[in-house]
Length: 386
Ligand SMILES: [Zn+2]
Image (tube, rainbow, N blue to C red; front, side, top):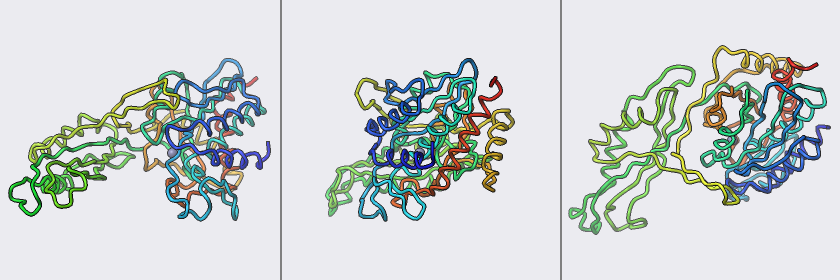
């Protein structure tokens, strides 16, 4: 298929709005593409993930994976191009999902069809998963069910090879206090002063560091006081949210232990909130802590060498040399690696444009991404080709 078909599919996906939990319009576009391109199977699983499968006999199972959901578009007036237009302007494809990550799904879909036309042995799955931006229900379900040898994750990498990222733990800190009239504050116990002391301690706490993922971090991101909107009331309680990023070894228990002294001093309770996820059709429900682990691909592995070689060759033809990096944001990789799969990251687009009103990607980069995915399919599925 031509590169027009690639841009058309990416634009069609952008035009199908798919905020987290409401991905079915975009899933329908992807399933239609799988059917048109002659995939052996095109179906939704119980979480609402869109799966396209190409079966070519015994051999490895490789999954191209991307998420269908996007963050909200926000105020459309702030966008240089309408956020659901899929417009191509000056060689760039615009809209919510252009970078994160509908373009990658389009590239993966066409590359899988290219690889099938070339011939391979094994199974190639293209998966458009749901709810990545809100806890990863789709990838969690997929990671449990589908035995896969290699996952190629298409989160934006600017066509570099990505080998991991830090984990994320959401922390909720509950502060006690006593309500009073603000004009008679001495009768109360202002929860905000407890918050202040806790934050001063948090800023100074020593966090683990070292290795390719550099170090853990703790960033306060939200504060709610109670009663809410009580501008003339001494708050009687407060809830602080902290976004904690982890390196390997810094798990939930270690993080809670590290903050225990601070919590005791402030007389507060630190906990990890529970996410209650439900599939769009309401049939699948899951509860899990709001955490995602760190992911680090094995340093020395034939599967990483294969990705390295395939991408160098495919992109080298266009004069590009892919660097090796880690993502600065968390992804579905830890969920997808659960069954022992190696996850390698490669995708079009500049991640710094994700979630912004400037979300757009160079059309030329999409064609290169497609070639990169095709080369990765062959690198993992070629050894058994007749
Ligand atoms: Zn993403």
